[in-house]
Each structure stands twice: as structure tokens, then as C-alpha cells.
Length: 496
Image (cartoon, rainbow, N blue to C red):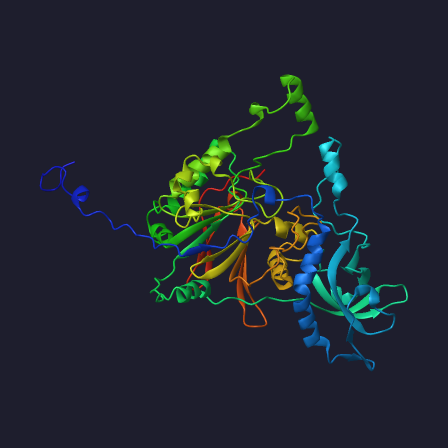
């Protein structure tokens, strides 16, 4: 087309191109808190009961301190509360308090027989949405090395779960139960200052503190649920365009402030399904062979996820947590997805010679995951720990349950009772050693966020990250102010 003065090819194509917003680097320090031992150092033959004793030993002093502060001067009808070392040493009619591990005796809880029945192709009980008995016959116990003590009382509010460490004040009744009138727990641990670890390392190296740029935004998405079908492509293309800054308009300026993407589990839709008995019989009859059946594996979802990451990584570093549906170990903590799954995007991962510190490329991490991002301590999960805890309680919102886990200082209290996990012996990484600044859980039904405060001024942003496949939402956290928002992308896959 000619311009108004008749000269061809004059005008917009020869003007200066629009300025493309650049991204700041992401200040990132992985902590490797939940990485398991390698090779022969990894043992699954240990007893799981030892985990609860380790948890009690590590948290008992903190709980005792809180209880001493609350009850040392407490009296009831002239009796002064006293501390009893073991739960079986309480005496009938004496006002006292003890510290132990909660155990919930619930008829609806699954047990190991369910897993055995699956292995032998026997019809297992249906999956449960809750472990709470409708008849109200569930019992709560408090246990330590000496034994178990049945506890009861209105102050319990049915909001405790197996595995949390608790101090209980009360008296033993004639029937042998311990009537509780008040409880205490450890509450939030010490929270590090922003940039504390980085500044400490600079001090040791006798280097000056650098001038730090204004932090950008952290994007968190979960539940991509890639099936490999064409219907996934539209919404995933919108996500790629937004994150890579190709969407244009105001979205481009917003996306340019994102400095890191976290994918919080369930990137693939049912990547490792367990066949039903009928499907197993059909395939066995058709193949008439034993061993690996290559026709039963569909590589398309993993290939789509690899291509998805390869499009984003040139513009944005990505940390990937495995989830319940992803091809990773089932037991917590889930170890990083294997790089062999990503022939395209693993080119952006640092080689093992550099200790696999993938700071600005593909970062395959554990679930749960802990790291320092822009100086803030971040703790996140793909959501299994929260899903299992919510089955123990009625009428508790997910964010409130997440707050409870923080205040109990244990992010997976129900493991290993009803949540598979590695049998730790000498230490339990699921115990909260330091309070995070941001705590998120993926694969929620809807977005939720709130701040909680601790007794020593700790402040934690708790975020429920919604399933992207159901809501089309990603979460953005301003890493300067900790303000949180969501961005909704146009197309959402229809539900079942």
C-alpha cells in the first residue's frame, strides 16, 4: 500500500520498534531441605513409629516453654497446675499438664489392608472425603514413649490431628480419660530477617553488601493437568504468551515484572494411572506376555509439558514441584522430576558439575520445597499435606488448616499415619525449623490468601493457589511488598 505522498513501503514498518520491557534477574537461593539421601544411604526398612518420637523430642521443649508461660501460675479450686513428665504418670483428681503426640483413633481412616487389597486385585474400599465418623465415636489420644492417654474435653474443638505435638492441661477422670480444659502448642518459630542468609555469607567473606534492585513478582501456577489432547492447547498457549511477554497491551507490562515462575504440582493429568482389574485383564489377554507393556504408556502429556517449558525458559526461570499426579515417587518428600522427562527444556538446566544449582533456568525441585527468593523465605507444597489434614477435621477452611500446621511447626503432621512419607530416623525435615515469609499450597479449588502473625512479630503470607485447569488463574506475589493478586486467562477447560 502506498502512503499519502505516493511512496511505497513508508510508514510504520520503518519506525522504531516498540520498547520491549526487560526483566530483572531473580535473586534465588535453593535450600535443599527436603532432598533424600542418595543410593545406598537411602533406607526404607526403618520403623515409621520412630518419626513420631523424633518429632516429639524435637518439639517438646518449645511446647513445654509455652505451657510454662501460660500455666505456671494457674490454679483451679485451690489446686495449682503441675507438670507431669510422662502421660501415664497422671493421677486421678490432680490438676496437671502433660506433653505428647496426638493420635486420632478414627474408624473411617484407611489402613495398610487397603494397600494390600489393591496389590492382590481385591476390591478396595472407596476413597474417603473425610475420616470423621458421622456417629461421633472418634477418640483422641495423647502419647509418648510411656504409652497412650485418652483425652476429651470441649476445649479440643475437634481441630487437632494425628502427629501434632500438644500440651494438655486437665485432670484424669474415674474412667481413665484425661479431661482437658486448655491446650498449648509450639506456635511460630523464629522468622529470619529478609536477606539475612545472604548478608551473613557476605559478612563471612568480608564483602560489601551490594545495592539491590527493586524486586519483581513471583508467579505461582498449579494444576496444569496436561492430557496431551488438543483441547489443552488454547489455554496453555495463552499462558505461554502471557508469561513470555508476548500478549501485548497492559498484560505485557505486567508480565515483564515477573522474575520467576513456580509450578506447584499436578502438571500432568493422571500420568501414572493404576489400571482397574477389568483393564488389566483385557490388556493381559491381548498381549499374552509379561513385563513392560509399551502400549500402556502415553508419552504425549510429558512431551507437551516439555515443549511448554521450553517456550517459557528463554524468558523466565522456572521451578517445578512434582505433585500427586506427576511421574515422581509417591511418598513425601517427593523428589525432583527426572531431567530425562525433558529432552527439550533440560538444555536450560545447569550440569551436575555445577552442583545442579539451577538459578536462572530449569529448576527441578522437591515437594515440599523451601528456598530464599528475593531475600524472603518461601515454603510451598503441591497440596497433598493439606488435602489429607482436611479429612481429619470438619468445618475448617484450607487457609486456617495451613495456619494450624505453621503454629504446630509441622507441615505434614498426618505423615506417616495416613500420608505416605520416607521413614526419617534422626531428623524430621517436615518440622518447621524457621518461619517462612510466604507459605503456599497448590491445587486448591479457588484462590485464597491471608496474613497471619506470630507471638514474636512474625508475619506470614499464606496462599492457596487454584488449579489452573479449572480456574485459568495464576497467582502473582509482589516480592517487594508481598501484595498478592491473580491473573485470569481467557479460556478455561470445561469440567467433567
